Length: 397
Image (cartoon, rainbow, N blue to C red; front, side, top):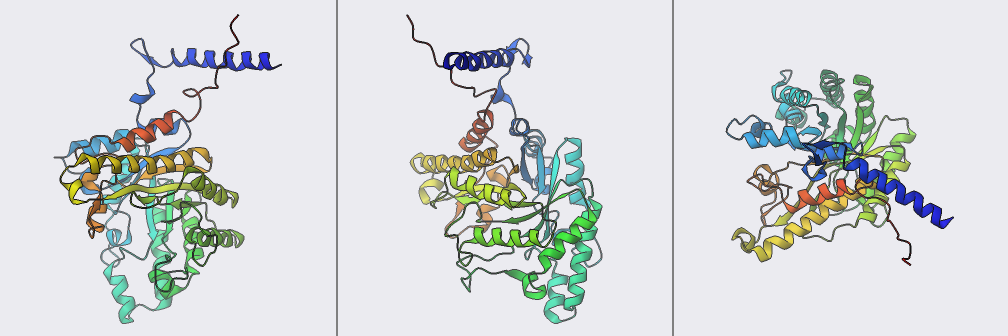
């Protein structure tokens, strides 16, 4: 029995290698997966590898590499800022659809999916809205109606064109906030109470019955203490479980994946555990804003390879941990990097004391970094036909 089983595995392995060496091939050369894009390799697994898109960079004719890589390398795109409320409706009742429409059209031309980001967030709101609430000219009842109108208008415009929506973003506090006990935070919780989450998902579902609706947040890549008072992942897990129990149409949980090499980050199995627990609630999962930043010490800024190389290696390891966990859990539908080049990363502009950067998978000159190659190898080596069952030889006589 053991011998026959070994022969069967070996036969499958040899047959698969034979197929791999003949189909597909170009000009008589065997198919080389390392020449494929991240997007194409991800689609082998039904996984969409995507990027956030800076529309100014995309439309910069003097910067064709950005547009070329965005179009060729990725299977999905996310508007970094163009779909946020302050961008869409800077003046009350007057919408600026241009940049968001451009991204959706760009995706269609390049056969890419679109992740919609973001419908409800406490940041990047138009000043007419926040000032109106602050001065009392917008009542609580009117604010709720404005939120309903905003969600309905935006989702309806892109109905059938957006695959996943980040419906609510970053609704939960952090343990270092005041008070430290985890709670619903921000503008919407303050003025409408936590019930706005359920409302937002129901309004989005009414506007597009087929889009996947996600809750999105950072620091939820793995569980900690398991106490919802100080474990943000546990708090979000309990929140999603509660929403599902109420019949709220939440389809997925997006873990942003903003990591840093200066921290003690997670191993692959910890991340898998978190994805599997969310999956057990009946929701999809995704990594939605992945980058891995490093401190830009004087040595790094001076070009000292002894300081730069360990950071690049640690960054690659963190990108890879999230990729391997996503590949291991079938509910993980997409893996989106939050910008692909250090030239257009949000990190240096946000983390400046001390300065941080080196956060993406391409450098400032659009050269692929170690992180790019590591997540590509994860995609290639995640099962057949590139990784096959071991062939155990019979003893020679």
